Image 1: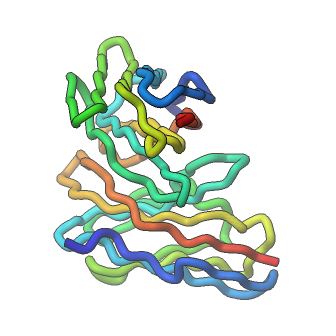
Image 2: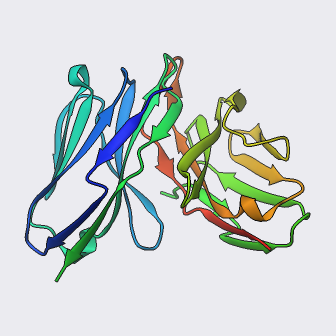
Length: 110
Length: 116
């Protein structure tokens, strides 16, 4: 099956810093999502981005499907950005079977 | 609008007991997914439904696990008998799915299951 790798596994930032999180996948995908799991365990949708670039406030994401990677950019980080960021892709022609990466654990220091 | 609703939020049970987790998807969504999250294995897809029909249950760990979706607004995940290694957070997610494609998934708050 498809492999999803996220990097870095852990990241510590000073408040106000910028960061880039990466998601590599081993085969063609039908769709790709970025999630933030907050310290309370809630999975929050950030982007649905099978291809192209999207922006939402301080966050933006780019997926280059032909090169099998996606990037999540966090600018001017805040302590509330702390948590785990997951990339999830759907494989197969049906686009339903979803594989999650292991996540990037982010801690933003005040 | 109500999101995905899961119940109970926490469940503590003894080994050997039957456990039933419940999920109500977002109204109008026709695809439903059950996931399990553990420290060791991360987030794993257990089973997904499209239009109330199970499409792929290859992620279900063993015969002790079963899932049903009797109608468009309700699904259950049952573990019988439960074992300590089933302790995890179980998430339900839903999305709009057209033939051949599933779109953005929205997750419920999860059920934290502890089997002693």
